Length: 129
Image (cartoon, rainbow, N blue to C red):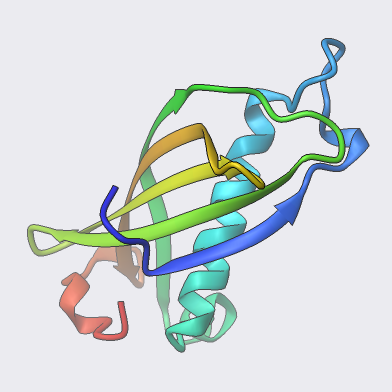
């Protein structure tokens, strides 16, 4: 991963664990999504305001490599960097790193598109990304 554009520190909550005492695989998707939303907020892109303008940002593909599990109380950081691919796709390169050592737990590539009134729109019309 290149130098991240954004990092968000979080902590594992007890209810996010499965019966093995580790974070459930589906929960990592929530962590990744929350970090993307916070990143976009820092860039002046708010999902509610965009939707009111007829623009929706949607995920079209998730690729996740699980490397190491998080457990209750673990602190971690979600790193985000972006890449425009073609005219309509935006790729979020993300990592989840356990603190304080910054041990790699998740490596993800999340591809999204912007839709205007349900139809793909050029990603460069969202210049803040």
